Amino acid sequence: MSILEKKDKKVFDLIKKEEKRQLESIRLIPSENYVSKSILEATGSCLTNKYSEGFSRKRYYEGQNIIDQIEDLACNRAQELFKTDYIPNVQPYSGSPANLIALLSLCNIGDTIMGMHLSHGGHLTHGWKASYTGKFFNSVQYTVSKETNLIDFEEIRKLAKETKPKVIICGYTAYPREVDFKKFKEIADEVGAFLLADTSHITGLIAGGVHQSPFGFADIVTSTSHKTLRGPRGAFIMSKNKEIAKRVEKTVIPGLQGGPHNHTTAAMAVSFAEANTENFKSYSNQIVKNAKKLALELKNRGFNLVTGGTDNHLILINTIKSKNIIGKEASLALAKSGIICNANTVPFDTRSPISPSGIRIGTPAITTLGLKEDDMITIADFIDKILENYDNNELLLKTREEIRNFVLKFNLDF
Ligand SMILES: Cc1ncc(COP(=O)(O)O)c(C=O)c1O
Image (cartoon, rainbow, N blue to C red; front, top):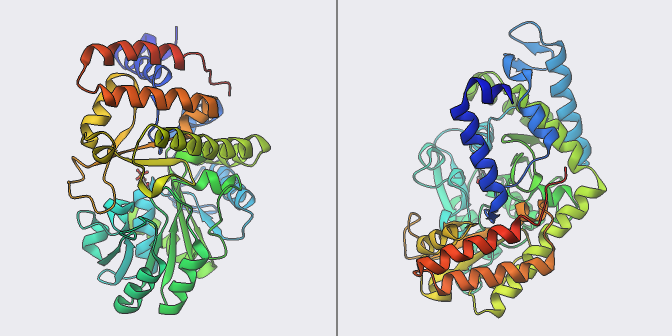
């Protein structure tokens, strides 16, 4: 019996139920994954007991000898993984504070920033009006092309020339294609803007060499350590030079945060090492192979995919155009049968983000579980059957059993 089970059965039971749910569902939320036991162990370690405001060798409290080594290790491993001399800061609590820290390090409140519109694939923290990044700064939002739903560099160039942003943000939450960081850098240079690459979703693909790297182009790279990178819930910032890194340090503390989460830093160090292996390269390759195959199979079944397919780990489905169902109804029907995804806006959506026209699905978690291209045929069949019968409760529950049996054939083996 575990100590938690003995001491707090309620919490223990809830954790066990969640573990079971995760193993008995087809988890298609593209920002989720399964982390290794090593990462879970580091996250649940005694490091959570320690306060360490400041940075390695410049702390406010004593007793930091070991913590300094852990933070240095995480920083060194980040540089090794991304083959870069950009200066890492591994203290941001998560992706959203990391973006706010990056913006506050590059510009002043009231300055103009330019990021992708939320319903075109940008994140809230890229200047969406309801986020403080859209309130603190004069936020200009670019969109994808109306015809192709792809990034339109000429439009972005035109908007940048008109609005002269201090920072241009690239890297997305719901954009299924590869990002050309070099082209963004050219535009940023033309208008004298900083380039902020938020690679949160695709960091694992960059680490695995499957997607272009932003290093050498962006002034700051922000990223979550979870999602495709398969690390703990946290974030890091990589700065192009010492001057920017200094500003980032000051924005982290005393600017926005207090003590770093040392247990997360250690787990991040573990994940950087895990991602710097041949195994991880094949994993990130397989994520994309699976996503492409799933996209193809869905298209063959008449689904309408934003941009017609994918280059990365995620697929955006316009469920109204595909099956005449709004996104939320589709995601709820899928969840009833054990396929977990999220409702999502599609470019130029006429519906609201709370009840949008599509769903977003992705392959990072199922690829960790060991699913390969052939399994994508089965998943496409399940999705098709569920959405064709989304109001047939009996069928949805019967399919739940089929899905449980299908997914339990796979095992987490790391
Ligand atoms: C591109 C991007 N940046 C930042 C974030 C925010 O990360 P967090 O949820 O850790 O605050 C997300 C989250 O989904 C994201 O997709």
